[in-house]
Image (tube, rainbow, N blue to C red):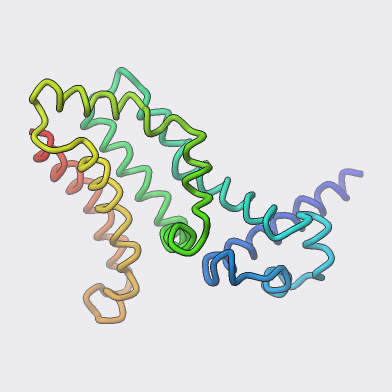
Amino acid sequence: MAGKKEQDASTEEKILAAARVVFTRKGFAATKVRDIAAEADINLSLVNYYFRSKEKLFEVVMAEAVQKLVFEISTFFNDEQLSIPEKITKAVNYYIDLLLENPDFPLFLVNEIITGDDMFTRFAQQNTLFQSHLIRQLFAMKEEGKLAVHPVHIMMNVIGLVVMPFLARPILERNDLVKDGEFVTLMNERRMLIPLWLKGMLG
């Protein structure tokens, strides 16, 4: 019995790994279940047996992405003991670690937001990240006249300054602006630089 459970878990993970690759490469709309089966090198019927439909499989993959991108970070965004700069520094480090480990995440999400029905937003709205203590801190600073820009600029810059280099990486590397292995070094430098840049905006 234990052997069958282990086999089931292994097969499910193999299917999920293939689905992540195919959904990132082709997007939800263009992906067929047979594409995922071929990527996983398993029988098409096994994909249907474990996940029933392409929609169900995509929901699992998207839920994983949201868990990593939104839910995990909300812990320290809602920590009232942390200052705004401390939260930003933690967010920057968390996202750089995450995207270095999962460099296809940004492309996957951008593809679905542009071409799909934006399941990411619907999943993310189930979380309180956008009503977090950090957001309340930023709006309070604005109301008190301590923040010269709209609070959303801070959030957009956290996202843009971390995510955009990963989207631009292929262009940078193809044009020899970034050499082999240099991208990771640059992103590690940004762990320090991004909080400094944003500290300037915070005043």
